[in-house]
Length: 394
Image (cartoon, rainbow, N blue to C red; front, side):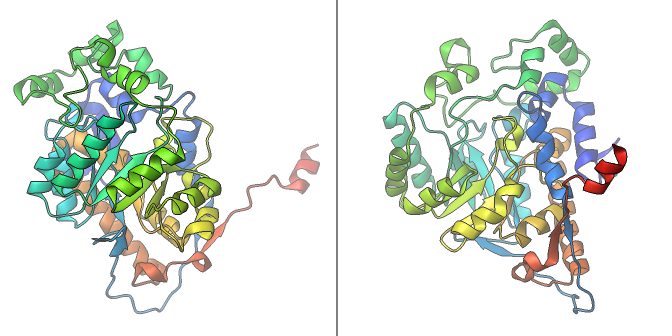
């Protein structure tokens, strides 16, 4: 299978699976516990139908949006994800370049493998810095100041990851940084030698945002230890409010899932929130962002920008989210699989296909601008059991 044969999310996933050692593929592919939430994130879109309008004159389509003060040429951005150079040696460099080609926003994680300064200097498209809250308040202040000095436009605080999720696929393979592989995991690396050759023949794997604080050689400050030892589960709304004041710019919270929390975000001065369950990687059994979107937009959509991620695989998924009031949507695995499979060329193909899907689907919906999408063009299916069917079965 070649990159040119990839036409959708599932094709990229298959190609990544063919090219990556099992432990690394499963790190991208897996979720928490029984992966119920992971599956439901996408299934939720299937319970919503689009209602197209016809004869609307749709020869020209404008899919641009403005979110958190940033103009995007398409309503999809590349969410910040960790450890990207572990999947392909180009890592964040490939994602940033592909996002710039398509005029959209990309994110750099605290656990990113390329420095946010390098990416900010090389690329002009909007950049997000994804931030974890640490027990060391001085470290928090220093990292925010570093991002501000680099020229990062948007600060994104992840609030659903004060401890790591129970990702059992990783436990079975022994995936960790540094590697502590099981025998089965080592065999998977042995049968996919190309990944290992690329890993050792390119620049040393680093975590530039945290290398002064995380010991890549192991010990208490390994990546596993980072979540359990360095992140602060006692973080409160007061702590976040101080961060918002210190940043004094575009500030969003990633991981909001309730109306109450959305309202608190507006009260402390956030300019955006992202409905997210971390792609099903944290609390299994949690509700999907798409299912929560309408009520949160109704509560705070006029006060800040509401976005969502988790489960988006198609242009139609994007249009359904926008119809419910999301200003834009984030994707993670949607670009990580093609990144792992083919580097920058893979990410560009994935974003190009998504853009083509959105344009085609907008035309089929009879809209020429994103702001023409609304709840009148969607219907939710009644998924409750049919009473007559139940009686007949009895």
